[in-house]
Length: 391
Image (cartoon, rainbow, N blue to C red; front, side):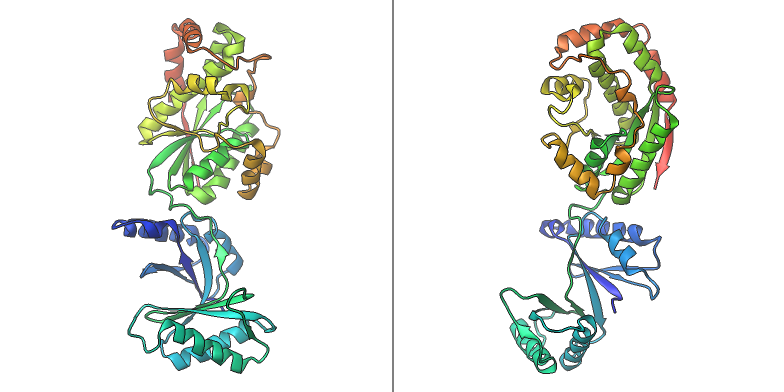
C-alpha cells in the first residue's frame, strides 16, 4: 500500500531565510541513509520532504533507517493519489481506509490541508465532506473530533497524499549543519552516548581512541571500532584515529605521583586530541564526562584537564546520572558492546587513591618532571596515528 513516506521536520521550520540549507542537508542525509536499501527518490516540496519507494523495498528496514536520521521529527507512510479532483480523491481515501483498516469499528477524525487556497473547497469543507463520505461508506465508523483512535489526513498539493500513521523520528538537526567536532571515544558507556547527543545537534563527528598495547588487547581496540560503527548509523561516516599511548602512560607512571596519574594522563590525551582535531578542521572536543561520576570528573579535575585546551570541550552528559546515560545507550544499541569485559587504556594505570581535588599549581609542577622526553613521546604518538574509516 505504501509507496512513499512524508517526512516532517520540526526545528528546521523555525529557521529564517537560510531554512533551505537545512532542508537540503536533511534531504541529503535521507538519501545517504537509504542508498544501501534501494533506489529511493527523495524530493523537497513546499516545506515537505517526500521519499518515494521502489516496488521491492523493505518497509521495516526503511522505517528503521529513517528513524536514525537526525532532523526528522515524524515519518508518515503515505498513499499517493495522482489527482486533486475531489470526487476521485474521496473514492481513493475510502479505498485506503478499506485496505488499511479491515476492522473499522473505531472512532476517527478527518484532517486536511490544501496548498492552493483557490481550491474549490475550504479546509473545513474538505473535512466535513470527506468525513460524511466515509460515514456513509462504512457504517461501523464513528466520528470523535476530541479523542479519536485514528486521524486520517489528506494533503492536496500538485497531487494528493493520504496517511493516518505518524512514526516518531529522532528530532534534532541534520548532521553536518553545525560544523565538526572530535569525540574522545573509549570502550565505555558514556562516550558513545556523548557522540550521539552532539551529532543530534547537527555536528559531524570524528573520533580518537587511545590504545595502550600490550596493556590493552586488540579486542579492546575492536570493541571501540564496533562502538564507532554503531554510532555511525546516526552520525554518518566517522574517521577514527587510533593513537598508541603506551609510552606516554609508562613515562607518566614513572615520573609523576601516582595519585595524579589519571589527571596528568587525561591532560595529555586532551592535548593530543586537540592537535588531531585542529588538523582535521574540528571546532571542539567532545567527551562523555559527567560531574562526580569518577575521580577524574569532579569539578576540580575537569578544570585541570580543561586548562590544556584552547578549543571548546563539549560535555553533553555533564549533569546526567549514570542510569540516564545507560538508558540512552540502550536506546541507541551501544550498551551491550560497551559492557564487554575488554579494558581500555584509561582503566589500566589507576591509582588506589586518586586525587579528587587536584591543584593546578601542583599538577603543573608534577608535569615539569616530564619535560625531558614528553614532547618527543607526544610527537611519536601523533606519528603512530592509525586512521580507520567507519561506515
